[in-house]
Length: 453
Image 1 (tube, helix red, strand yellow):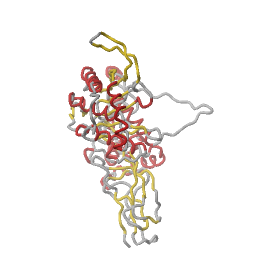
Image 2: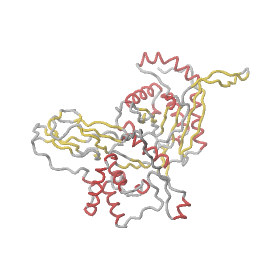
Image 3: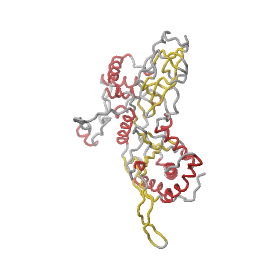
Image 4: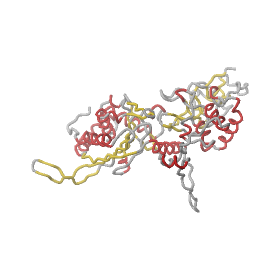
């Protein structure tokens, strides 16, 4: 019998593991080479693993909802095609290095039984700053009532300090035995704590809970899909982590609009695709980041990490209504033509969920175009662990006062609002305001005679 493993492939530099979402082939099924056998997910991107061999699928190494490390086998295929061949030795549903020690075996069995029943939580991931928690760790933490602030205190022995299954089970066991003291000021994961002075005086933390929601006759209850749950968790986490401030600027982009209208037909004929405003906005943002590099940073505790690369994410609405943010890596090395090609390629594949996991990782600044929905402005939420995000509104014709050598006149101009949300821990109002003003300046000073080819 020729048993061959199907390996979890490498999906990007920063991707170390993925979650099994759905098996497309059952044990005993015939599979062909390059035929998809399992659907996996990393953060917001779903993808499929094809079989590298033709034969009979003899063993699924993991259950749906399990987390698999890159390089580990996910299935076994008998290339001899013998469906009745003996199955390979049993493999644990989690990597060996994450097995719980004997002292917490009972706790592990009890927790995993609860996780199995709570299937709607399968596939959830969470980030706290730059720290990533696997769906399994998150499910165990939730089942044990461990909030995000408390989870952040759990020592991690995994790669890059990640908390493994064994780490969280050790913590649960030690906590039950009184060996671990729960942080007195740790807020619940879904609620902010009361001010510090109140906590000190009362000796406890007051949390705000979401109100109970009643379901009335005729109401429809719709379960969030996996991506919507991820987005919800990420947005709430961002608001807890960063004190958001938003500055607004109105820009006169008449020269820019007229320039695009003049070259878009020739561009479409030569390149076979449209030139939109998005790459133009990204170019202006990149120039402004060069002028104000402290916008291109992340916060790690009391340390500020200045990013060398300028990787600009752009929010894209998918066909199912969910939001995803593909990233243009090293955007500062591209000219406008290169940015246009990158924007069109990523946006088209993002809408049909064809991005690779690495293409939504590593962003250092994000742009969202609320104007595409007819909105004139917005107050975007920061995409952690970045410290700023810009929303551009709809471009509208408006009367505006122009200064000329013959005096002030009123003219019809193309105007738009730019909204800049930033993390007030490290970006003060002066820097945040000057940055968005500089972006507007680059757009307003557009050369109407500029050539793109």
